[in-house]
Length: 220
Image (cartoon, one colour):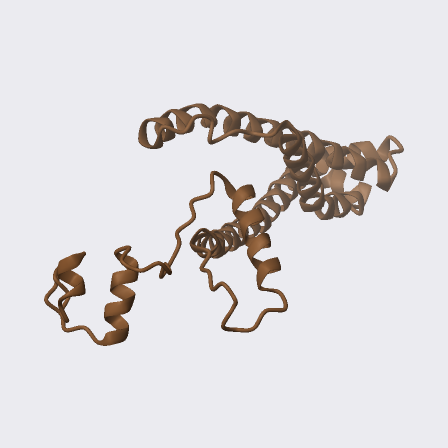
């Protein structure tokens, strides 16, 4: 400290100092009664928010020279990380949306194929007195079963996948139970799967209901 006070260069870097930079450096090294900066390390984010609230209240109504200028490094990092995570989330949602549309198209194709393969069966049902809505209900019921089964299977596989994922993450980061499946989310996924399956298969089901019984019975 004494060496730095008597020198016009930075004793650590040999950089020439002006009067203001020398004063700042001495304050940083503890050679001034007025500190150049104070670093505060809160225990958690709640304490950090309380400190920021206190500083904001202190600065309120004061002149610019009397205000405490602070930088919330944790908030800055959190903001940057949050923006990055939001971008990743949007990309994943876009991929999920594309997957859902593709799934609906595939379900419609499968149901339509089933209609073509069972044209004669549809004719028999109509000949026995089945109404259009009865035929539609038959295929809608099949798509509901398909949707529920696919949803349950998907949720079950996702639940099983959490175990190896948690093991891998624990070995890498020492964080336990990072990946978990909320039962409510699982139920919602099953419901969404069922609704999308019904929507995808309803149009082919309506097409099946409109088939003429005589033409359907002649189909080989």
